[in-house]
Image (cartoon, rainbow, N blue to C red; front, side):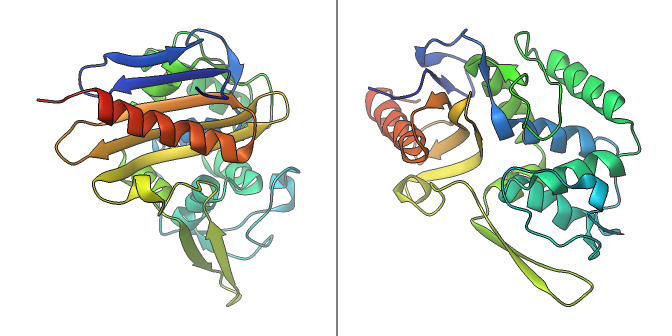
Amino acid sequence: VTSAHSAIVVDRKTKEVLFQKNSQTPRSIGSITKLMTAFVFLGTNPDLNELVTIQSKDFRSGGVQHVSLNDPISTKELLYASLISSDNSATAALVRLSGMSHGDFIAKMNESAATMGMQNTTFVDATGLSSKNQSVVSDVVLLLDHVSRNNIIRDATERATFIVTGESGRSYELSSTNKLLSSFVDQKPYKLVAAKTGFLPVAGYCFGSIFSHEGAGEIVIVVLGSSSDASRFQDVKSLAVWAYDVYKWN
């Protein structure tokens, strides 16, 4: 039993669907969008050591801004602020720093989605604040499978916390929105390989994740439209335990 409106569990290697619920129903995905934003940004081959700032024009309401305006940090740290703590202003800064116009960046996101085989996904903004960013759980599986092959994205999404120090000397603690990190499904024999949360009032609580298990394969679990923050994580924990208990891997 899951509270999520849509859910899916897929064997990452064989692509076999182990469980699905409303898997082809389009839903808003919120900040899961940031995985594609990071992927497109990294595709521009940025200098991750370059010092950059969040400017006033990057400010986006919604959520928490974790790094002060005009306090230089590295490009990598800015990317981590986007992925770990789901910082909307940091994400908007990534789009600006890509050198592309907003329209061109969004077009690249949709082009990348099509290349990944995400046939039922549309992006209209890079932060996930727009309810028009929509997908289906089976497409989010493809997104997670592709972007988690990037070492930077995978490393960021595996971190519960990360400390950023600006040129001002001020330190900023980035806390992950993923509450499964360091839970029992992120401890042996389980391992949480990559994940991203998402939320909008119209979307409900969303979560995409990849798990591994000693002696078994990797599974991708996506839930969209769970009823609460706690329930999305409970949904995913239950599905992970169930899948590894029911299915056997060679």
